[in-house]
Image (cartoon, rainbow, N blue to C red; front, side, top):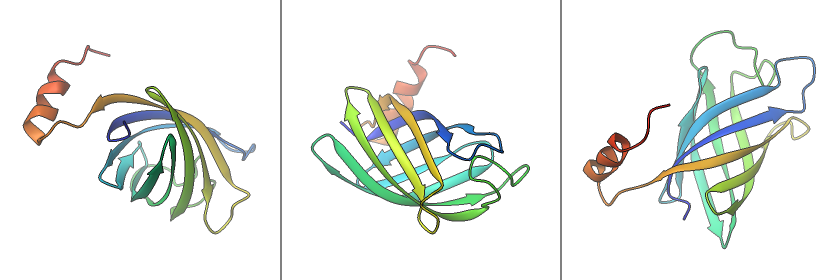
Length: 129
């Protein structure tokens, strides 16, 4: 139910900067990888029923370093989510500054195949856009 490719949109509680973000996440075997136009993420998660929690390291790699997390160019985010069908509501907090929060919704786009070839074949069947 959790493992697969997810896309997401979220908002920050920091009001004096751009407070909207979007990106992708790949959840597999307790490991999460992801990224957006300026950052990449890697971490781990645990699932219990419909609830998910974990943390991931994020690092800036491109563009202006000010973004949804202020001037943070590298750090740890802790997260918790609830999965209902193909949607996950999620809350993320900076580990070292938990007053900085992101809230959003992830949408599952595809399950992981039994191997890479079946996953790539599934991508070919996705509608454009």
